[in-house]
Length: 332
Image 1: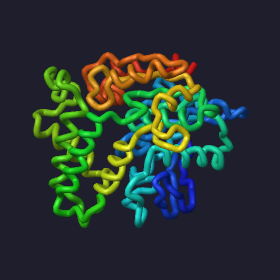
Image 2 (image 1 turned 60 degrees about the vertical axis):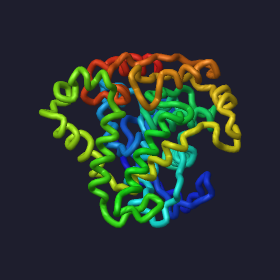
Image 3 (image 1 turned 135 degrees about the vertical axis):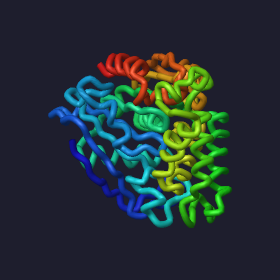
Image 4 (image 1 turned 30 degrees about the vertical axis):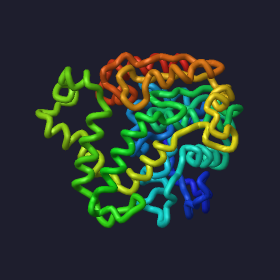
């Protein structure tokens, strides 16, 4: 394993703003082979930092470091790479486009990597995987879109708007997603909103929050699984990444000028679409609409009542096995 910081200098974003002294935090697992053709890029998801993603890496995991050289770049705004919490005058909007452009520089200049065997991503990581395939069609052989989509759906954006409005309503909010102090009450509300969306109605009907997640009662569950989770992150970082998620669209660039069909048909990578059957953010229907426009793709919904978290099943061995078996097949 290696980890480090890759300095990008002043980085002009797609929106025309500048990240001053931009940098990416990164970590690798496994060994880069002589041909440099065993690379799997594993971008981070909303509010996640690379240690949060490492649970699925291992000899018996989804990604085997004995076979693959796995590179985890921390997404802008997650507190480890350039973020509002560590960068003065951080831009109002940093997109997935900006992340994958910076990640390509990291791979080329840090490791001498020009092509990727695969990009594996969950949630916002899946959005980045989709961007990689659309922006660099000759670079990526495969992508695994685990609970993600090519464009953030309107219903998904309504959820994100509720979270942004909650943070904006905090008395500590001083405008533009910045805060004079940690907005503790707003983060408490933020976590409770998240709890209602991240897991399905069926999950709660089955009382899995008390059995599988071992919360003694609902109040404890709110606190330990959601409020404390987001209290560990900087509120301005959370806000910035909400804006990134909200703006997710592989066609919103000069290559495709908003034509999503054109962007999807340009993808040459083999695409594995793995939505969660009960995911409220990235619906199976979103991927079903994308499928006819992809050259080589499979749609394989995760048969789970764990909602969005079916795609990141840290506490869910059944879904973890389903993902492991099918991702390993796709990578091979």
